Amino acid sequence: MKEVNVTEAIVPIYCNGEFNGTGFIYNSYLITAAHVVDKMDEVRYVYHGESFILDNRVYCEQFGNAQDELGMVRFNTLTEDLAIYKVGTECHEITITDEMIEDGTASVLYGFHFFSENNISLKHGSVEICNSIDRVNPSQQDYCMYCKITELDESFNIIKGYSGGPLLVGNKLVGMLFQEMAIEGYYHIMKA
Image 1 (cartoon, rainbow, N blue to C red):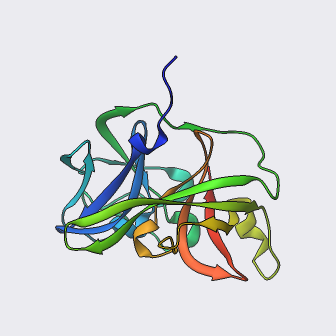
Image 2: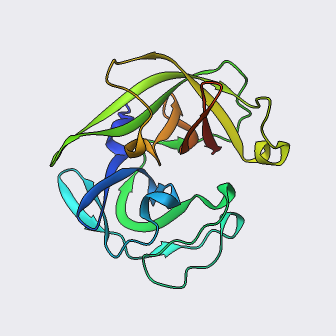
Image 3: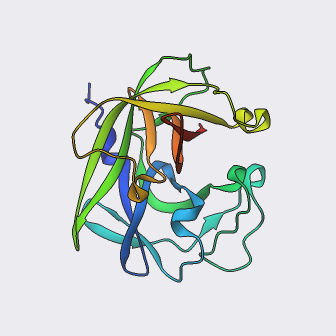
């Protein structure tokens, strides 16, 4: 039986020639946070050393408005910070869970870290999941959960490049990092 390597599915995203964030491939779709690719003329991802252009975003009614320009993503609220592209690449290393994730569940958050021009590296940190926290609008908690870093590589900090990165329990996707802002040490995660 083949060993699953989830990092195969996680890709860096470049906008207008510069590294801008993280995405991941689920079957033949590339998923990322909309703010990673918003208002960019050219968006690419790199998979197995090859660069692919993203020019065919699919519309997800639950999370946003129809695009009005190819390659452009419109969003106005947290619930719309999702971009989904149909891509030719297929990867089945990540599956999406439909299970309820309990508070305190250990998970791993992945994201690309920018060191210098043409030098990025995939990082990961152990996090603990929380379904709700005080001082957050209850309506947000329908689509949002939170994670708190519990154990990490010294160079792992939640930074801009990690936006769009997957939160995984084993090879199961439980959410995606979509906001850098921390509340009481917790970071926003869009539920899978």
